[in-house]
Image 1 (cartoon, rainbow, N blue to C red):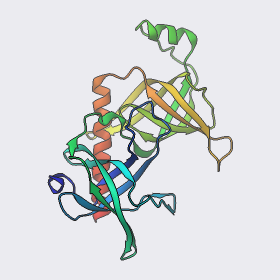
Image 2: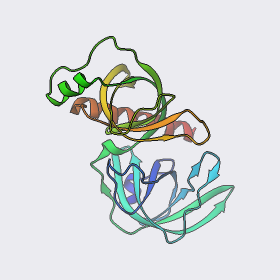
Image 3: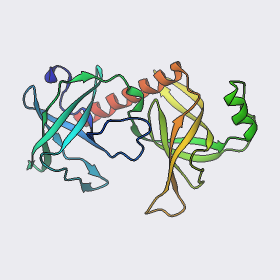
Length: 238
């Protein structure tokens, strides 16, 4: 079944085996790519990197692996059984220790990007109106520029020189190219976590969960992610 869905060049994510949810904002995710499918239960993947540093995941370490495929997202558990260098490529060998299955909670998969966004904190009356499911956004209030650095159907991570308080509600406005069209999104999110970047003082990273997104908007964002992943995969194979 592995070779039916997983092919070289596809993106994958490795995450320590403790489950995944939108509340686990501190859980570490390692991004990699499929290098070669060796058999129906073994494959080679490139060793993950952060900036220019290789991440030496331990042999015998167990992880949940999430494959971005042309058929959607698939997940299984795996164990690292070897690591080595081959033709100047650093490789991990993964052995599947559970069955590959379609992963339904696609909205929590994050796509790395660099997208302009305008944002501001919600006013008290806007928060009250949102809770009462009324029209809530006050027009014309000033917005501050931010940069989205990863996006999912469940939320965003962005950086800004403005620090928003944890558990506060913010208004986010940005555009995506979906299905060949430019679409604007006006969403409210809850700030889950804020950290100042170590190498850039005065710049703050925010993790945000959407609070008012509808099913159509969520599916459009997921579609955008898969379209962009497909474009990146095609570029890497050229």
